[in-house]
Length: 329
Image: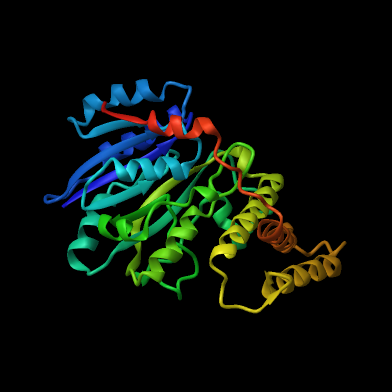
């Protein structure tokens, strides 16, 4: 069994170094061949040099690919197309895998008839977490912990398959198609949800997945993401992304003015709660903030569904896509 671990990256040389070190330190079971592809999404720092230096420690299994088109979806699609292993492992450049990550993968795919797996994404804090951090919106900082019991990744699962800790059979990815570039995140647009879109497409195909509590990565959470401003922006743009997805794949729920009615209800309840607890000293900051974020979700969805226009590709983009290249580092 072979696995290609794909790491999209953009100007995160120090964090990427930690990610690669964690891969080298992980235990690889007999019967599993591991290859690593770093997809450099237009970095201007020392990323290429770092990968070249690290290659000496990987025995020819570390590779480098440059993709000039900005956006994680372009990097993922390019990396998947450039590899051919039985399994595709996806981690982010600001993550470190647990020592048992590969052993968990090998065991899962040799003992179960499954198409994909996901697991825990635990925070590695740059600074202590703020008191207002709410457990209702931990996805903002990529914190995933669905407990310590194996459970199906299906429509009953309270979340999605997060792309920062995912392993999929290549054949199911081939059937599902490419990651959506219309949900592409750039410096000015905090879009995302390409993972959520892919997850729903996998379920629509009847793909079988498992959440494995022992499939663990540690995700770096920088100080600049631990602000209320960032949480508000993230929730708004997550709403925009979901509004865009809803244009193509409406949910089986009741709508009001093109927006799921439950979003109005959640936002209204949040506003009412904020008004009721105003001035009460016994109320925690997290209890107030989580209700405010529901309103940002609603605003973003409405904007994405009715007003947001997906930027058209620039004439130079096709040329830059053709310039993508890969080398054995």
